[in-house]
Image 1 (tube, rainbow, N blue to C red):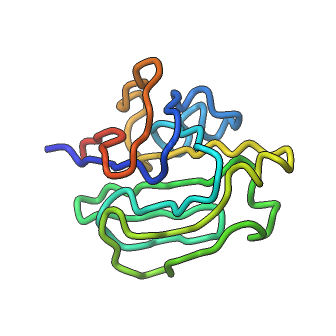
Image 2 (cartoon, one colour):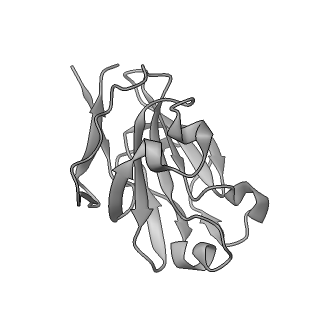
Length: 151
């Protein structure tokens, strides 16, 4: 059995190893992929069905019934913005379905401040190397599977 993880936002898909943060690029949090998001305001969506375990303006974690938890981190070092530029649309403890709105932001506005807008999507506490790199030119499309993981 595998768990599909859906694209939380649109953009170009790159290997997690290309994320400009060693916590993500070395899979310290778990395997996954990174989305280089399209510019313009976007609502980031829940990548799986489950319960919101953590929610910050710049990141959230959804825990699925299978035991798989998925972290979506909006930008690199965006915690230093202290919530500026993000609108949280959910709350800790909420039950969400794949595709439910989680956070609204504008990656181009973040990039204009000299901060990477890359969005790591990570299957937490899964074995390193279990999410294969994307094909060259791959794009994340809302409503489509980004990757799958084994619980």
